[in-house]
Every structure is written in structure tokens, then in C-alpha cells.
Image 1 (cartoon, helix red, strand yellow):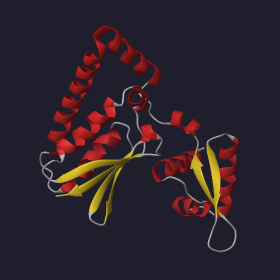
Image 2 (cartoon, helix red, strand yellow):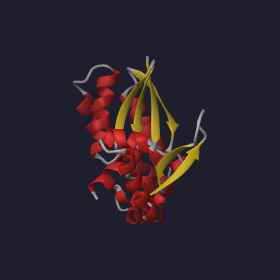
Image 3 (cartoon, one colour):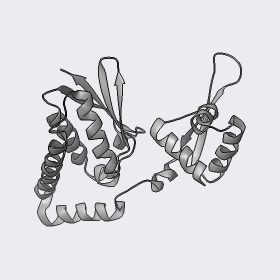
Image 4 (cartoon, helix red, strand yellow):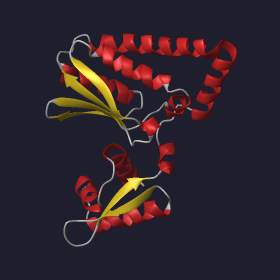
Length: 205
């Protein structure tokens, strides 16, 4: 159902939400959303956690289960892992490092071209987030007091990154290089380490 897909996308990009918040986002009644949540719970797509409220009943927060990962782009996980194993078997760890480095150089070329006429941290991050979203990362930019955050709600290369975290190291280095003249970049949340998303803190210089 279209509403189910919208709910799943909201939970993917925003994390745990209450039925009331979902109702406001979707323009539905809270009761109507609860019916959708029960159906999604029965299908194994969502789960809930009740958290104590200052007053009255506990507040129920809904979140996605691991089962829903299959709904999003995965870049053919099994094949990716097999290819990594093959590269290591044929060319050794050095061969895999060269492959990762080549991927980083190629991405750097593409991103630098796209950012060439962008000025300021926010403008560059907004363009970068669009590029990453087009690649399946579901990226957004958030401004938080003195910092910006590049949020990636999905990792389309998660299988490769789990198999070899140098892919993740390479992506962090890529962002740091792209924004080296404007900001410091650190990764504060990491999907591979069990977080819901990858979150990069971008502090303007």
C-alpha cells in the first residue's frame, strides 16, 4: 500500500516516531495511522517501544525492523561480497586497497566537478547530499547551531562496508578532502557499528 511505503520512508529518514507525529506528517487521523502500524507490525516491518512520559500513559514509539532493509537499494549484497573475496584472493589486500583508492579518486572527480561553482559550506553540502541521494544514500543536511550535519539514512554498499570498513574510511576521507578549505568533518554515527544512520558533523572553519 502507498501509505505503508510512506510510513516506512518516514521511519527510515526520521527514526522512531509516534503515531501522532506520523498522522501529522501524512495528513491522517491518529486512529487511522494506528491501524496501518498494526498491519505493518503483523508483517514484521515495524516494532514499537513504550517510553515513560512525564505524565499519564507511556508514549509509544514505532521504528523499523531489520527486515525492511530489503526494501531499499542494496547494490546486490551477495555479489559485492563475492567480488571483494575474489579481489583479495587474486590480488591480495593491496589489490583491494588499490580498488578502494581508485573508487575514491573517481568519486572525488565527480564531486569536485559538481561543487566547482558552489560557495559556502551549506551550498556545498546541499549539492553533495543530492549526489549521495542519487546514489542511494538517502542523504539530507541539517543545520544545528554552529555546525551542519550530513545525514545518510541508508547505506547502499553496506555489505561491502561491513566486509571491509576501509570503504567507510575512504568515504570519510573523501568528505574531509572535499570540504577541507571550508570545514572540519567527523563521523559521529555509523551504520556499520549499529547506528540507524551515518551522521557526519561538519564544523565550519
